[in-house]
Length: 369
Ligand SMILES: Nc1nc2c(ncn2[C@@H]2O[C@H](COP(=O)(O)OP(=O)(O)O)[C@@H](O)[C@H]2O)c(=O)[nH]1
Ligand SMILES: [Mg+2]
Image (tube, rainbow, N blue to C red; front, side):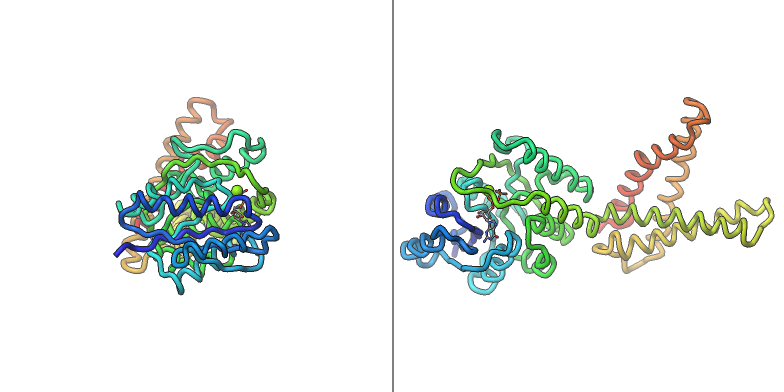
């Protein structure tokens, strides 16, 4: 028996595109061995008879073409409703997200399914890998937003290996959706694409990108609102990026270290010869606080439960490593450029070396789920 691969097409006024697209999708079945294709159109408040055209086509493909009609509440909401319907009524093995304006080429569907067969949990049709592209005639601001938006997200999540976070052409195994529906429910606009991919990665999904050439729509117009998109994406990053949380935790650690040392100095007025001990206590308290906050918050999605102490020791070693690196580099900088530059040198060393060093090692050695 062939498994079902369901393509969800959200539509809002796509009368000029939908018929052509559905035909082109079903033709792909000839090139696919292991799956049968079905389509679910979620049409929201179209006034150009998009739903009427789909209803006509259902007569031709009664078992394979489905339609739901909903209120227009944004792309994320439209997919969410489609996923729910699919989960209950269609039970596919793979679900595709795809724009209905012919920007995404149905001819890529067989290749994406091949990657699923080879073991990927999610396949992204990517505009930003070798061989992929965005339309040449896109306005300057749209190119900039799309390109830099992706770059910021890649660095924000420190997941450089994924190039196209906002692509709306994806195939994924149903388990990803079963697990992430609760999480993505809150995101109605385009940021939902970012939320879904972020969540899938945190669940351990194997993600594969294949190049696509994104074609500009011929009929109708784009419904994207850039300002809203940018704002919600940044808000999502601040809330969920482990890297940004890790940076906040680091700042808190710095303040703790500083406050405790000040307390020893001004509050307890310890003798000067005991400063080393005070520094030891304050640094270790900061390290412990960093460890706990990272475990329960920054890396909460891969929290360590067993052998917490062993992990804390590793965490300490990495922290000691960062102090040693700082000492060596600061000494080097002072002897090369002169001692008047030590503050700038220290800031640069922390930003360019210590933060990436510790983030990487914490991920690889301590929280290495
Ligand atoms: N059901 C539904 N579909 C939508 C909504 N907003 C956009 N779409 C569809 O989502 C797809 C992508 O939208 P589009 O405006 O082309 O975005 P762009 O390609 O990023 O400019 C198209 O198939 C639209 O018809 C919505 O609120 N509800
Ligand atoms: Mg489009």
